[in-house]
Length: 73
Image (cartoon, rainbow, N blue to C red; front, side, top):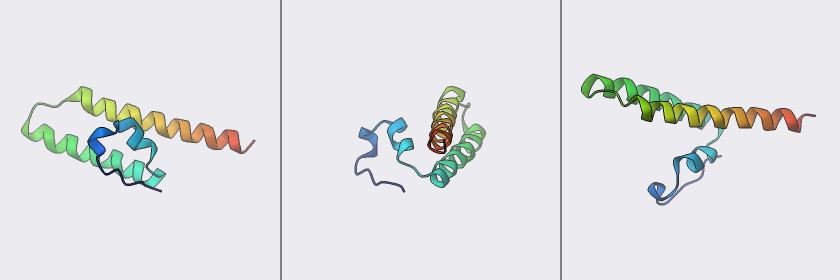
């Protein structure tokens, strides 16, 4: 379940990602991909920023998968 952060700029993105549900996390990833493609048309791509979002999302998904598999034992 998502949580509302009154001042999201004060909370690190990694913590905001942890608060997202699985579907919301995948939606966020999809939105970052869309924005990256959109921005590439107007300005030179910021590959480092895009890769950082992807890295954080993938790490969170891996952590969740690991936690679920450990809980099932």
